[in-house]
Amino acid sequence: MKLGFACKYFDAQQHQPFPFRATTRKRFLSLDNEQRIKLIFEISATNLNNLYLNLKHLATELPALRMMRIGSDLLPLYTVPEAKPLYQSFLADLYPLFARCGEVARENDIRLSFHPGQYTVLASDNPAVVERAIEDVEYHTLCARLMGYGKTFQDFKINIHMNGRAGFSGFKDAFMQLSNESKRMLTVENDEISCSLDDVLQARELCPIVLDIHHHWVKENAFIQPDDPRMAAIKTSWRGVRPVMHYSISQEGLIPEQGYPDQQTLGVSKSKLRAHADYYFNDTLNDWALSFVDFDIMCEVKMKNLARDRLYAYSLQK
Image (cartoon, helix red, strand yellow):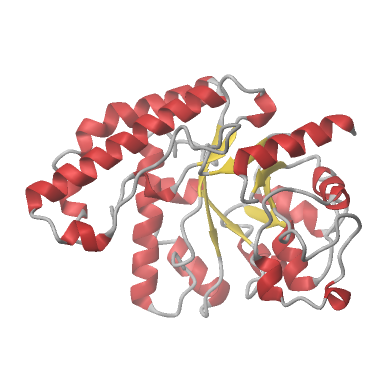
């Protein structure tokens, strides 16, 4: 079992030694073309260099901890109409930086992924939203492909939600418009508001299903178990690749430090329960998450790798 973290890596002092830079659309548009190119090139190069350093550091950690979600702002503003054409003037100069990231990850068995944001909705009933969602998925695919991925099924994971008024039918229609590389990498997860596990399981013939156990609890007030009949369908959707699940818990002070919380007795709204804690402070829930022994776990609490490390240390005591 691998335990991963999302986007930001913290050192022992809770500083980020490998931070990504970003910019705003407003700042970008305030510049002339030459300044725009300089800005996005410098940020992109910085992000790729820091990603490489982060991966080199991960390569020194235990194999069980070599799993990371890369931030989506690797190439800032790439899908902004005014920025995308400018990237073509220097993107080839970044190819070696992408390539070495992929090489060090593969050489050291570091499992990588992206998670496009909440506005990447392939199942929208608005064609313009679907068009932008496809463009965003393909941007993430480009980044993965430049690192040498997208060649085989699930050699890299690009995970999205399936929420959207068009439901599974709309999701399927949009999925069929994706590039072959995107189809190989895309996964879909259940969310805590609109799209249940049963909903996303409709997509299991198209792409792997990522089980988010916290989302499932928030939506259903139920703690799904490893022997749930739906586990077979989830695992089958991965076609022999080790499946990934997501694990987070509600914020400190909202749920007890021990035992399974019951929403009916908590008196806390689902909107508050959605928010993630800093650390995994409830060992009952930790035991539950770690019982999914056939899955790798993406740790989605706020303290990132520091929380992951504590969870891993706890797992060794069991």
